[in-house]
Image (cartoon, rainbow, N blue to C red; front, side, top):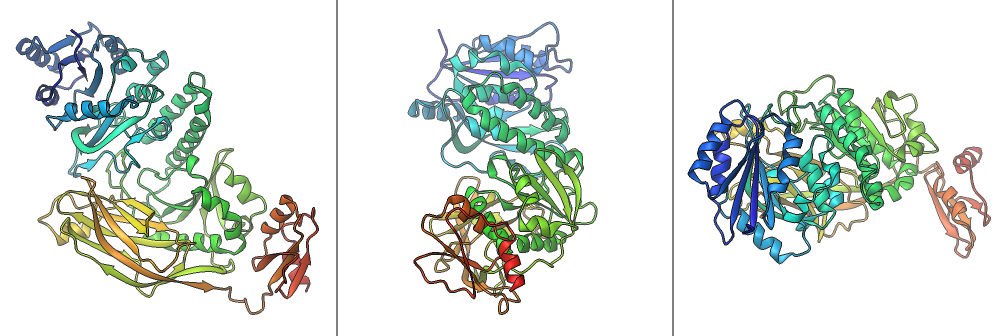
Length: 593
C-alpha cells in the first residue's frame, strides 16, 4: 500500500545526532500512514549500527538504504528518491531534528487546503554547535503565506528539514538537480517550478550548524563561488522566463563575492547604490546602508542628484561609519559576531546600470572625483573607498524634524528602547536613522518594523550585538544580539501621522513599542539667497528627450513651466520642442549671468 507520507533521512557520520532525528519522526502523530526511509553513506562512527538497531525495533516503519561504498551527499540522494513511495515526501539530514509531534499533520492539512502548492515548509531554529551563541530563527521575514521560484532563487530561505512536497515531483526530479553541491536547494527550485511553496511561520524543528556540515564547512567565498557555478548551469535547463531572475541573482552574488575576496573589514559601512533585484542587502554581517534600491527611489535619483541630497546622504553615511556596529556573520569562518577590524570607513558599492549613471553625467560622480580610492571594478559592479568631504552643496529639499519619541509598554515585551532618533533632531527626510533594542517576553523578538499609517516603511532584524544588555540583565539569556538599526525615507509622507515602532516576535505577534512624532521642514542651500531660480519654459509638445535633458541638469534650483503658465524665476530659458540641453547648460548660464 502506498503510504501518505514518506520521510527521508540522509546520514553520514551523524552518530551523536541520529537518535534525536529518528525519534522526532517516530513521534509524529496524525491521520496518515508514515514510511521512514534512511540512507546512510557508509558512516564509520557507529551511525549504521544505531540505525540497524532502530530498524530491528521498528521493522514495519523503517527501511534502510545502505550502499557498500561512499557515494557523496548528492549521489546518495539521487539513488534514494525512487524509494520514496508516499503521496507526499518530507526529508531532513541526520544531524537535524523535529520538535513538534504534529508537524507533518499540520503540513498535510495545509497542502490539502491549498491544492496549488507544490510544497510547504515551516520555520525552524538554528543552533550553533560551537560557542555559546543563542538559537535564532532560520526564517526572519516572508511576505504572505508562500514563496515562488524567484524568491527561492534569490536566497535559499527554506530549512531543508522543514520541507514536504508532492511525491511525484520528488521522484521525477530532473538531471540538473544532481549537477553539483546544494542538491536540496536544487530540488526545491525544481519543485517550485510546478507551483508556489507554502509557508507556516511556526518553528517546528532545529537546524544544527557546525563545521562538519557541507555548507558551513566552506568559507563564505567558497559558497558564493558554488552559487555562481550553479546559476550558470541553470541557464541551459530552465524555462527562458526565469533567465532575467537568474541574471539578477548572479549579479547580486558576484557583488557579495567581491566583498568577500577583498576581505572588506567589518568596521565601517558599505553604502549600496543599485536596483533591488540585483543589489545585496546583506554582506555577511557588514553594515549595509542603501542609497537607492527600490524602483521608486531609482526613478527619483536624478532629482536627488541635482538637488544635492544624494551627496549629502552619502556624506552622512561617511560621518556615521565610525559608530556603526557590525551585524552577525551568518556564514562565519570564525566568530559569528565579528570583531571590528581596521579603521571604520565608508565604502561605496555601485551595482549594475548605476555604474554608467554614476560615471556619466551624474553630479555625484563629479563630486566624488578625487575623493574615492578604487578597490574593484568590472562590468557588474564597482567598490570604492570614500573620503568624500562635505564640500558638496547642501540639499535644497525636505527635512524631517523629530518632535517627540514616545516609548510604549507591551505585555509581549520584556523591554525595548529607541537610541535613535533623538527628539529635536533634524535631518534629511531621505534618510532618517532609527536604532535601538528590543527583548521579547511572550516569545523571542526577531525584528522591528516601522509603520506610517498603513504602510510599512522599514524593517530590520534584531541581530546587532548589544553586550550592554547582557550586563544590565544578567538573568536573561539570549539577548546579546537584541539590537537593530535601519535608515528609512520619509519623502512624500505626510507628517500628520506618527511612525509606529512595532516589534515582531517569533510567533508572529506584533508588539507596539513606541511612536516617533515628526514634522517636515524645507532646507535651502547656504547661498540660496544668491542662487537664482531658473525657469525653463517648455512647449506643450516638448519631446521626452528634451524634458529629460532638463531634468538631468546639474543646476539644482530650477523649475519646468509649461508655456501657458507664468514663470517665476529670475533667469528664464525657452526650450524648443526638440531641444536637448547639455548637462551643465543651466549651470553655465547662471555663472555667466
